Length: 424
Image (cartoon, rainbow, N blue to C red; front, side, top):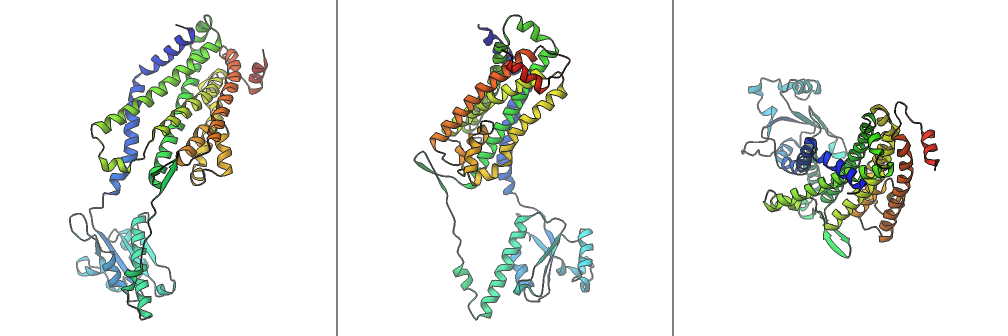
């Protein structure tokens, strides 16, 4: 076996035999499955307890109709809303003060009231309706309240114009867009939610795995330095082979995890753990998308692995290593900061330029490929620039590695590292 192969096998087996590897292998798909499926399940779960509410209508015209419009039933058939002013005798409240905001605020604080809404006297001419509650983050409830009150106001205006309010139902129409994505000469239906979710999940996996395995290389080099393993290894091989074998071995661990997760997903589908209805809601993964995913992982890992390896060779303590890895992590964070812009404008000049910069290409170009159809020359150019940058990074990192790997007790400065690079 070649010396590079020996280092590769040592690094690979050392990590796949660890308990932490197998824990991560099982927990990550469980976590990702929960992230995708749990929100779908929670979206269908409704609150099973009634809410005590109050409608304060300063106009005196909309209260009854509005209460009837928003009323709904719980899963058991009971009313979803209990209107406070309909049970004053039982509650022992002061009916004369139900229009006082200060009094109603005390009812909210005392949890005798969940929320109340005040319809102002000038609501028909553009007055703002006020919603008060202990929780104001239930956007579904707020949308329902706005929609029901808007319908009432429209009906009143139709009546003022001496038009039949039933015309409102006849003229209301909702246009629904069905989106079809054209890629590779084929059109497939792709909803916004599915496309956004698949892109976000896979980009985050790329981001996390590149950082995790890149940091793993840095820590491995630092451990070998501190335990004086490098002196023994370098007595039988040169630094370049040691450097290459270590990176390839740890990179293979990442590919093993990806392959295992793919097998788990196929097994879940085969044994019916996911129903057909759930599969329709899950983000679709085309073979070409998975191929790009693996390709960008490999190239992104190789690029950042070389940089993390150089940072590890320049460090002598964990604190120094963390300081040197921060700029590398910031480079990976930049695509996440602009992900919304890329998603909305995948073919804009800014998006195109960012996807061709090698340090950002693994994430940005993958986003563009998944949500758009970049010209083939841009994809090829991104790959070419990535490979060229990897070659340059390995040349620089290799020269830093051959000197820094044997250096202990002193943190290397950037100026000193540059002298190592220039040294023949």
